[in-house]
Image (cartoon, rainbow, N blue to C red; front, top):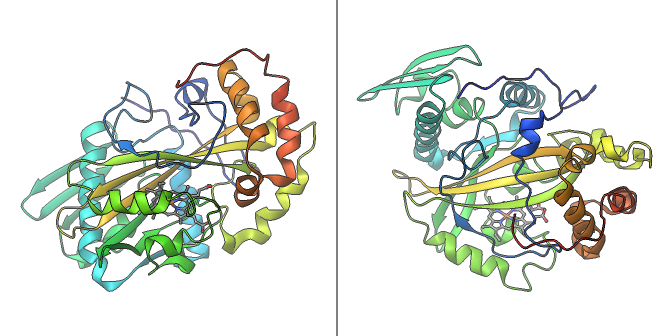
Length: 343
Ligand code: HEM
């Protein structure tokens, strides 16, 4: 499958947009007209052709531009990529997972040759041709996790498993919805989920942790999460809040369709073979309201979800300032017709 990679930006002049095909394959996350936290975990099975679930690791038209944006973030702030010393084996596990998946499913763009520990990796879109020894960090230009995740869309957390808990002991996080790896590194599952409202009380994190502690190798799982972003900005980190927080005050009835974006995270989890760690990938997809309403059932449903969202969730997700304006915009695209469950 040959992908036409777009030249676009996620900052300053914000030239990002979705092609009609990218809109059609957008992972719209709502299977009902209302939303509440749940343990919405399912097997990460191959999905329909051309959908973001077709392959375990999804590469799309935004790949090259996203990798450029990640390089800019890391240049300004190297602490977006951190790994505690005992996570090196998990880092190599991640190299294997990502290279194998990308080369198998996008052979026009990526190629991997393995002869024992002598590996040869070719990444055509980014112009990379690298021979290295698997397991020997000195043969790569960056540590293994950083090396491969500078070449793969989405953020990644590597979680060590010990004492019946998961610990966020490594990660690369440059496209996050207002949380910080530098703050969370070394924390346990419930510690890093501390700020999330309501979900602790209804047992979501107890059940999710129990499930993940038993995650089996070769049986990855996935879930969707969502929030909203003003402008197609990938780096909405606490570290850079001074750059993007103010954007929330710039939404007007005239620009809401263009400025307000639904941001969906396709999150997948794999048990890693050598380290027994879990990798958690967070792949963000952005779509502006004008694009979203081109699919009538999405405009209709998202209007209802946003209108009826619990205030605690709207506050936590940072939507409160522009929520009503967005609901008013979407109301024009909701004819009141009943919707069917699922999509
Ligand atoms: C939010 C990480 C697995 C449910 C978050 C946050 C982080 C995170 C860093 C942001 C917290 C903040 O505001 O500072 C992870 C990692 C996971 C994981 C590394 C894998 C080991 C899960 C699972 C569930 C889940 C399996 C299933 C229920 C949530 C929910 C939120 C959240 C509901 C709030 C999201 C929102 O409203 O936008 N997670 N998470 N997480 N996580 Fe997880």
